[in-house]
Image (cartoon, rainbow, N blue to C red; front, side):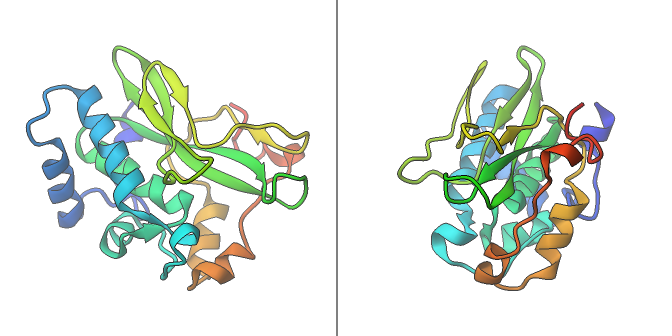
Length: 200
């Protein structure tokens, strides 16, 4: 589990603001499950999804997501991983490939998390933020993600990665505004999924 607890450039959970927030969220809670749920709900509800709220800047580093209180789904998953790891809960990254308009191409990756609880094992959660038609919840062992795969070009990749995909981080780093990012969302075609480690 060590690799799912590491500090990195993207998941900078040793940043003082993240450590303080993680401590505050966990205060008074006596189980990893309760702390994991509190961290998930905090990121889901308190950090604004860039598109839903049309907010800038485009964030990618966990501490910047916390500072600006906004991020795309990927960035929100980076912050949730940081808060979980700061509370000694292993956390990784998961991806789906989804249609942007629910009608086929174009497609893009959607990012969320998996966390490890001793009594449950790996459990996937999606902190992107709820809105009409999106109702992600924390209710292990029952999974309730924001989106389900329905179309032939879509995919729910099984891998739980210790670090976010490089193409996701690079896409976030390349854009400054939410609307420019919306036109350049990262994608991985189904044939290339194994190359990116998404099938393991």
